[in-house]
Length: 78
Image (cartoon, rainbow, N blue to C red):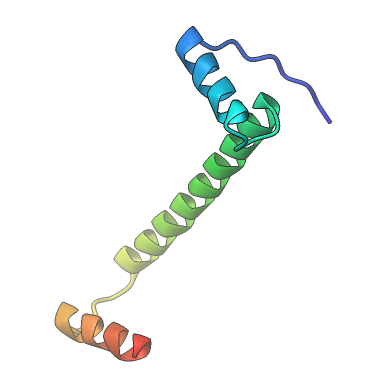
């Protein structure tokens, strides 16, 4: 596993150490890994959402109203 040194302001360092002392993480390194994984997941989801939006904007108009789309969605969930 690669190592990385990170400098934090005292407030963030104290916050991270408090999460560890609460038992939420086994170490500050564990906390940082979790936060980075969450950020990675968030960015991936955001990229997929943007791709879907771009695809929708590039597609031709269908003549279906937003009300019809919402109704189909509720029907699928039922």
